[in-house]
Amino acid sequence: MSDAPRTPNDLERELGRAEYEPLLPIEKKLIGWSLGLGVMLLIVLTIIGRFFPIA
Image (cartoon, rainbow, N blue to C red; front, side):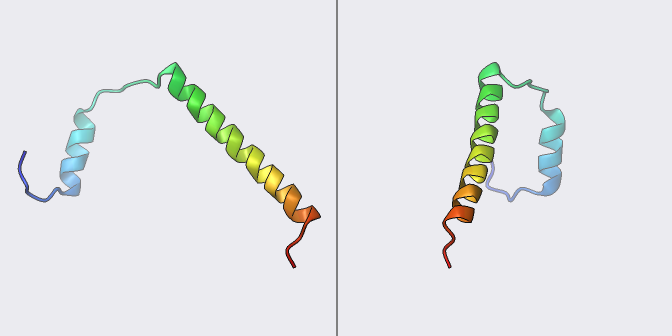
């Protein structure tokens, strides 16, 4: 591996050669849990902010 700086063309070339890999079931489950947890926390924090305003 050389120490030459990488260019955007190198990245495009490597991505073009990469094979398609579908998501594993555990990856799909982790994505779902992360999105669900994020939405739930946004809702909870919005409710807390409405009932207990800082100012």
